[in-house]
Length: 305
Image (cartoon, rainbow, N blue to C red):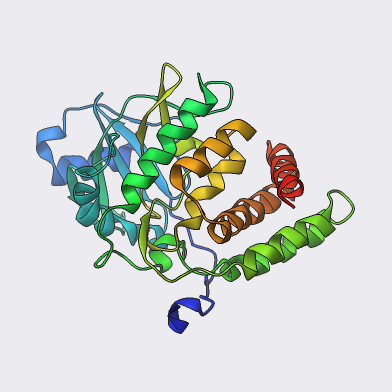
């Protein structure tokens, strides 16, 4: 049975108010709280992300400092659960080495994690698209097999990944209005409605929450590690299937779905997760490859229809 409380639509709340962090602040925090690492050089990580400011600490560690109070909610969750998950997963994940406290003018908890080697995944860097899809599906299958009874339910700590897609309906509608006349909004609405109508059976399983190119690391073109579990939790795992449209080829997508044994409802909801995110990106001036992804979503839906 579906829990009515889980089916209610959460409120995302106001836009997070981000703070500013620089290398000097990180050095002061480390010097005061972890003096054994005080002599190590600190420098920003290239493309360090939005939710967290990320800095190299020496060559083998990173300091991750949440950029807003909402993102800081994930620090304790990662400290509590990443060691548990790491023991059950087939690829390395960043188990925290230490948890820092507010200080030196910085207001949130933060963490020090190991640096995992690899380069962010992209279509042109993946050596074998089908092999990559199967490796990723195997990783997610192992994650879903971890006991979920006491895991973190969807909430502000992960922006309600694992809960209803309707949380993001206002964002999808704004993007559709902005894109009217520029993309096939009729088809997009059909796909979105199908995703909203696809029911979840209510069985909690673990999910990563942000299976995206920047969080999947490659070595020689193969998947070698998965990072950034800030949006992880237990609930509906369909959000993790969005990667099938954003990063996988058509052949890889089929292999991914078969290996992960994704049912029709979960697949439709996953397509919805991919759609709303891509619509929001496509509506921005810096749309990146959003229109390519929309093409993947539209083509795959038409074929299945």
